[in-house]
Length: 104
Image 1 (cartoon, rainbow, N blue to C red):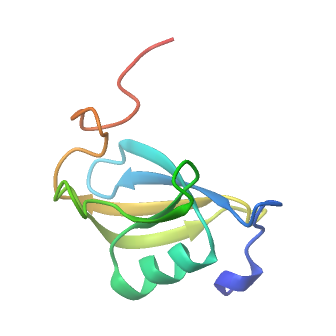
Image 2 (image 1 turned 30 degrees about the vertical axis):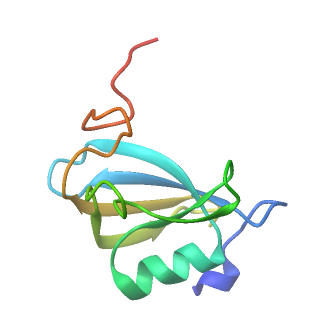
């Protein structure tokens, strides 16, 4: 499969779950478009699409909390990605290691 064949939604986006490759802990979920998938694959560091800002977002560009890509998987329907990464710091903008630090 190539990145053009992924099942992007009507807005040209696909959800991406980010997981620590060493611990299997889920760190975050973010949206990707075709360009951010391409950049992530080429640079081996995560890039996402910011829906609020309407622009590409390189994870860790300002914070230094980058995510080194180990593997990028897609699910059986090709409509969701799983990025297995080695994080260099917290994933969450709050400073927490994971964005999933609260219980409902």
